[in-house]
Image 1: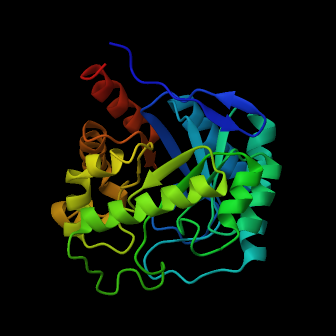
Image 2: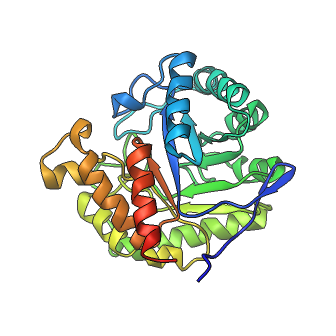
Length: 279
């Protein structure tokens, strides 16, 4: 049986992504929760990019604004200063690499795409910057809309839901519609594991991921080395790789199309094994 295929518009060309795929995290920030993902210099970012591409990453996600729980919000100028040199350098060194910019700011998205990015990953789902959806539509690139309760500074202050899977699915359904009405051709949905959710909420979303998949858009899951693993296993982020691998596998079996990870090699292995059980 052939696996289902879709086509994405990427600026002025069409590409055919092969799901499931792996997105590698490159943080151009000094305070992201997992130190190994931090790129403090452009050269360091290039080394991480080369390693991740060699290990099979389909997308490199570059962010310049920490979104860990309790993090303070930086300004636009600082975010641009962090991400633009990294995106420019990766695009020049690896012109065929697919680069995503992790930002909720439309101005950052616009300049990042001009520098070589080909996707926008927005934790605000177009609600933190009202110009984001129209900007992405004009740029003609795929768009990731994520669910978050609150902001990174407040999201873990007693998050609550009556039915987390139903509420997140309803939210993402609305953002999918808004993105399409704005003219965005290709939308990916992210339930926002760890963004305004307790560990119990995160596991409920993982169990019921197919409810989000039923909306008809690819689903991205980012649970790499997060608290939901450490609270169960008694680990820390720096020794949570095994737990991450287990949950990435469950996510794939429950319908995830994209894994956003710190550890590309192991995630690619998850994809290969999970794929062998399906089609």
